[in-house]
Length: 243
Image 1 (cartoon, rainbow, N blue to C red):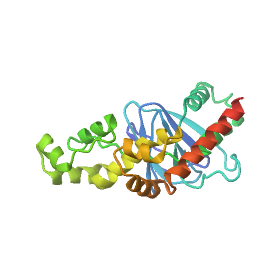
Image 2 (image 1 turned 90 degrees about the horizontal axis):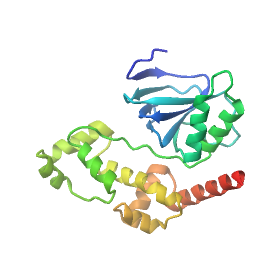
Image 3 (image 1 turned 90 degrees about the vertical axis):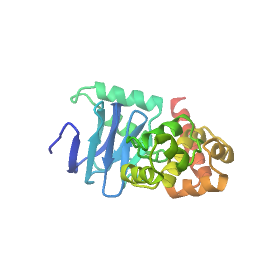
Image 4 (image 1 turned 30 degrees about the vertical axis):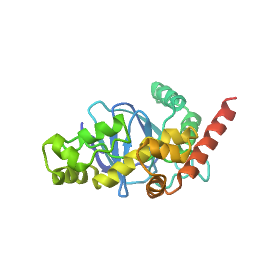
């Protein structure tokens, strides 16, 4: 397989992989979707799946490989998926990276994969970097409830509304409105995982309860309450294992 400085072209692996970033980020692209890998998010890549990747200049990966069938039955691993990496899982991934190939444990690789892939999926929302879209991203990263209209952004950036709309479609593959909804849902996940009240979480990211619930279901295929219950159940199970 050819690997260039920017990343690598479409290819597949015989083994399944978890890809994680010690530093920087990359975007993994499959026929169905694009998924971001960074210091808070890992991506599961099933065996035999065609995919490509584009690296940031600072990207330093950790790759955990597993033979087909290594994971427990019933894990949702048929498709590529992004999952949140908790601090204890980051420590495990960094420890795995420090071990040499000759001493890496299959059991450790399996335990890392099971811990990550047993979680609810973490959506990956593209981060635009162009001059008309990046300022909007920066404002929403600071405050997800930021609600300036495109007219207001166009006046601030000395461009047309059409230029901003085109920038979002070109850089994220979706309209500004859809991108902002997805970004806000992503920004809300940590509060939900801590058990936040759905209506309060929605308001915190600038959405109505109904609008938030609809956007959440479109994006993750479940309701905010179902996601919260799954996340809290996983936290309790992790605590029981560590006790």
